[in-house]
Each structure stands twice: as C-alpha cells, then as structure tokens.
Image (cartoon, rainbow, N blue to C red; front, side, top):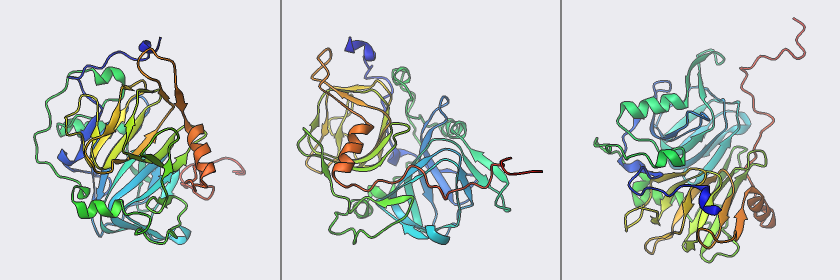
Length: 358
C-alpha cells in the first residue's frame, strides 16, 4: 500500500532544488535598494520563497506582512531602530514575523542577504504610513521568474515530473556565503558566537544554541527554532553527518544548504553545496539522504508536516516524526523557541467596527 503514496520520480524531470549562486538578482520595484532571487511561488496557497539582498545604507519602507514570514540572515547586518524592538541582526540569526505585523524603521548597516519564506503577500506602505502603495504576491514572483528565464522549484509531485526547461544562461551572481569568510559568520560555534545574550521577540541567534542529538541516529543533530501547534510546521537547523534512511515527506519541507555537500536523488556524484535551496513536495520519497565528503553538512529546514520512516518501499512504518516530536525534544532540552504570535504587533491597517459608535 505504501507504493501508492506517490508515483516514481522521473530522474530527468525537474528536481526539487536550485543553485541560487547561479541566479541573477532582480530588483524589487516596490522597495528601492532591495533585490531578490525567486525560488518558489504557489498559485494555490500564495506562499513564495526568495533569497533577498538589501543594499547598505537603505532604510526600508514600512511593510505589513499579510501572512507570516520567516528569515535566516546569511550575510550583512540590519538594524531595527524603534522602541522595544531596537536591535541589530546579522549572520546566523533567524526570525519569524507573524501575519498582519507592521515592520518599520529598519536601516541596513551592511549589504544584507537573507533567505525568506513568505506565507502571504507583503504590503508596502505610502508616506503616510497607512495607505498601501503596492503589494508583492506569489504571482509577482512567478512573473519575475518567467521574465528573466528562471525556472522555479516545483510545488507538487506532478510538477516534479514535467520535462526540465532550458536552464538559465545569464550572468550568475553568487551569494556572499559562497566566500568562506562570509559563511564562517553564519556557522560560528557556540564558543565564538558571543555570549548568547542577544534577545529580540522576533529573532534568535542560532549560533550559541547547542545541537540536540536526534534519537536513534548517530552524527545527526538539530537546533529547534520554532514549532507551530496550529499549522504543524517546525523550523530547524540540521547537522547531518550520517545517512537518513528511507522516508516519505508526508508534508512538504524546504532546505537551504549552509555548509558541506548533500547527496540527493538524481544529483551529481559530488553532491550539492552551500547556496542550494530545495523544496520537497508533500509525498516525496527518499531512499537515502547523506553527506558527501568530510565537511559537516549543515542546512536550514522548514518541515511543514510529518516525515515517515521505514526500511524500504512496502515495509512497515518504523517511525513518524511530527511537530509533536520536535516540541517534546525542545521541552526536554529547555530550548527557547521563537514565539508564533506577538500580542503587541499591529498593522494599523484593518478597520474594526468593535467599539465604534459612528
């Protein structure tokens, strides 16, 4: 019966990964100083994923995140300048902004690059701080990709089996983390990342967080950053130096390689390295995923649903790992998770008749 979970993948089709180092930067017209590399855009859910770059000296226009958004800072530094949220965030710091949050007063100290997943549109506000000048949606990202000859990562198993389009042949613009010095800032150990006193309601410094040993797997550790009991989504950093055995992604998942190289279905013998971003659609199956070479394999992971492990197609289920598993591990290890909601956040856009007698 397990064979019916998904059809066999065609290894000549569109696989679920893209090397962001080979892509160009595309201007965000709504936000001067901001550029992006499009990764995924869903017509069904409105979710989209990008690598974003913001030039040094830019003060970002006020924005309202109409859906939740998570971000991993890869290089550079930006500063929140207002009130209780005042802080500087840089490489290795991960954040989550809940839906309907208004964000303003951000100044970019150094040219900054970050990977972001948007679970809804972003509204760019006008000079009055309330009116909406423009909105960035998944369809805008899809249009930008098509206009620049870029193929987005597939959203479903059916899309994965479509013929591979002609690859992009323009001038590549690698990420800053393609340089070892910039990558080192993201991956500093807990001994060199500072005193661990960085605090911010939306952000966490991932570097001082100790690795949690994953039960039943040698040389495999995780840092648990956020767990949503509402959506079943978990966000992790993963240290993967062993072999992950046969498994199904019962829910989708996405990954960004930060260090080392990963051996991947239908991939090259040398594996995929830093800057490669993957999206595994719900139902995808791997017979094995492992490190290639001797460097630590470290990657980000958004896991949108359970992962089922077995010993091969048609064999009994050995284990199912879900948000409940990660929450239990976080509690057992006193891991401080980023909150899912922040009561003080407000967009100041939505009009409410409650208490209004007019």
